[in-house]
Length: 224
Image (cartoon, rainbow, N blue to C red; front, top):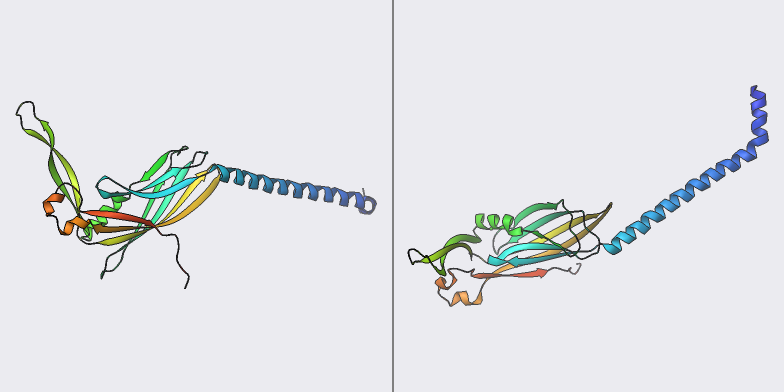
């Protein structure tokens, strides 16, 4: 075909070509709309099935932990947590601490994952002379069958040097399928001596901690 014949063909079939292009555009737009709708529906579905609770607690010997509980009905594939901690003591500069924790295994429904905060925190508190950890021996009440002597057990006890607080900002990112959810929380741990420490001889606390930790979730504050 000559150029003139090609041009004439396009003139004769221009309307049909435009209609074809419009059909293609409409099909593409419909595909994108449906794709977007499916993504939204999938996200909403996952969100309805997802649930993660973040709660700080203490274990034996006033060991600080953060418990991550799967409260949803879908398994959580991965969890990453970032913690920014500010340790504050009266008349002393604040002590900042940044920690990161991860779990690469699945957390099933009603299961808990524990962030052992004390494993990192104790070292910093001891280095800054806020607490100390000591080893103690105590009788178990059982006797050695050969010597007849009481069997001793070994444990560790923490002593408080100064009252202080630790504010924990935690950001937890959880992944379910290809969806990611982020939770941000703020807690404060207040460390204070037990009320009876001031009037009870120190040896009463030979085998137990002489302080308590009060945990408060900081929900917000007034904007100035």
